[in-house]
Amino acid sequence: MSIVEEIKQQISELQKMLAIEENKLTDSKNKCPFKYGDEYFVIDYDGKIREFRWENMPPDYDTFIFKNAFKYEENAQHERKKRMFLIEFHNFRDEVNGDWEPNWFNGREVKYFISYNPKIKSFLIEETVGATDFTSLGYFKKEEDCLKAIDMFGEEIKCLLAKELPF
Image 1 (tube, rainbow, N blue to C red):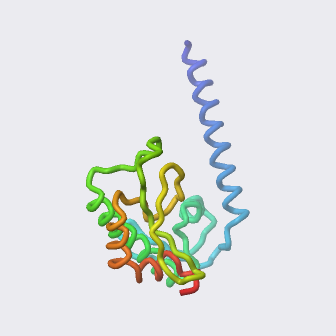
Image 2 (image 1 turned 60 degrees about the vertical axis):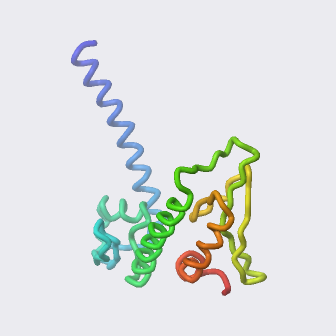
């Protein structure tokens, strides 16, 4: 392949990448609640909440696309607490599960997870063998570990993950 053909191929690949980025930017602009000059809040790499001014620039839209742009500081604080809680919860879950990982192809292996029923205002421990419920808390090898998790983290689950549910 000649140098000219290589450059043409590179240009073609760059044009495809450009089209993808332009589509992402257009989509985010259509759904974005921020206007030029608005203040918004971001959870920074170190967990601190920082205030920015919306400038309609790609970094602003990237922040928005990745769900890290908050209209109010309180929302950013809540999200930060939620993320920190999930780290703590997952560490607990991983510790009690040891090296166990759910095997979704084993129809006899029971996987336990925590759910909440607003009608009875109570946490439930449910089980599955083959279908995932996409729970953000993950799955446990043992039912008793779900009970421990509810005892340890029940209030945080209510406050941080299920704030829209009636408790």
